[in-house]
Length: 474
Image (cartoon, rainbow, N blue to C red; front, side, top):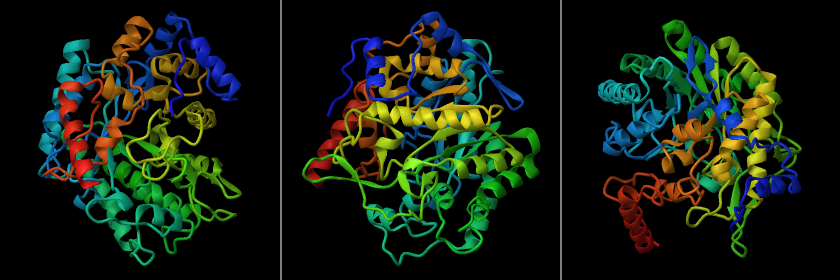
């Protein structure tokens, strides 16, 4: 089902109004757009030279032992010359069983120098393009994939609906408190390796249903890491405190936080449209949801967590929502689902509005904590106009682009030079990248992901091969 048929910004703005997407606003004037996006942002003791960020986008293109591969180097060289001053380095596992696929990056003593060389290369090509790296910030996202780890999952608690969606047996063992405590120290060790590799900023990943994110919704878990919010936040807070105690201000502390889980969705076999699983009321699980209606957000606990984490050293927040494994339309409003998945159950602009509403509420609650907004890709060439409106109103401090950067790695250069994007190059949210991420049938157990429509020479043959394997297996 296609929705984006707008021929002008005025048409898109009218649609937002008609659909009551009251948090989606636009600035049309190109000079104002450029000025808003060019504004530098102070982040802790560092500064990003403009207000544009690249979200952590996994390429699934590392080596089997966790090193950056040839396509990893290619992606980050393209990002580094693209003009954005905050390049959020993708999800990188801190332990082997924390990887989400066989080719996810893994930071360990044996791979540290590979990361160092890639990071230095990024800085070199950025310096060659822009003259300096003093205003370039590259946080590395550290993760344990938990329920979605490969080849063996680790779960924080049993959520019957997510168990069903993820194929998790009801008697599958839950990770122990002692093992969670060991993971805290493994995050600290990985932070040290990141520092040795040359990173000056960290992201402790807590989104997309991975372990730290799942713990935040573990209201029915027993023990030190479940139940009351103080317990569910324990691992995150301990990691922040331990990293700060060990490394002081040598590492800027950030995180990508899932701020609203919603509920799992599945495909209606008759209509193909996504529909939520049946759920009990009050809803006993989840994070950032109303117990009386988990399809709507309640950010009270999210704000309490952020207040604690600011005390513990949090200096930068990337606002995320939803889980790509069980409700992808929440996190990334799309035109076309990846093959086999459900069609949008709502107009995508309502998903954009949800992103802007949640990020705006949190940024206003914490005006001194720089936040990166998400959810812009579906707006295509008009993403800049919406970003400028949010930046001008101080509803967010930085505009982040994810999928769109795979299609258009130098979007920020065009934004600053022209105040607009090239319509022929912008992501159309057709989810080819998501399709590739889900394909596990090649000899490495994972296809690399990128943008076949706009990076055809590299990813065109890859998606063709993946589709052929998918049809044979189907």
